[in-house]
Image 1 (cartoon, rainbow over the protein chains, first blue to last red):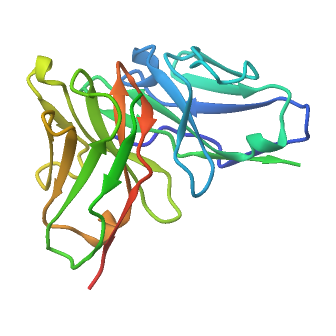
Image 2 (image 1 turned 60 degrees about the horizontal axis):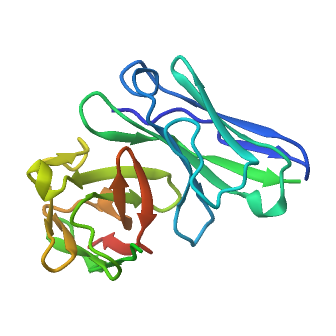
Image 3 (image 1 turned 90 degrees about the vertical axis):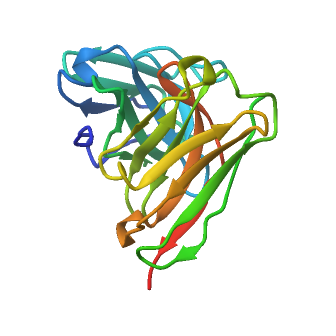
Length: 110
Length: 119
């Protein structure tokens, strides 16, 4: 199972919006509405920020939103803030009851 | 509240074995699946394995990269999940996290335990 494809890095100024794509296949992202996203600050524990494509856990700011079209899921961070600078990973279940993460995207706040 | 604590990581030679533990110091996790995720130095997250709850027979699933070498298990009476790692390879060097698999996502994570495979 190959990792889902994400851009290596994206950047934006405070207040701007950035979108991270996560491309898989019909056997993972495209086949199920079970894409989740994780924020990972280096040296800390990954944090769930989106589940089931577009649902936000309680406590996660509504600046974070998720969507999906075909085999590609997306995470949008609106109103970028300094604390959003981190690595972001998508994850999807697969048709063979396994999970696959994306390659990861480094978000830089300029 | 679910609070997971990972332990057991160390320096080990290639070909040897190691067992990691994931202890729940909060409420029982007996009703949920548990998973291990790892991150090699300078690399991204990689899903490793998960074990379903007793209700679903404690059945297991593995990533292709560890299948046949790693075994995940759980002891709900002790609130512990294990990852038995055999025939370790240098490419297994990573920070290993346990996490609760709630439906189809990982909502609570341990702090991670470092495994270094080197001669």
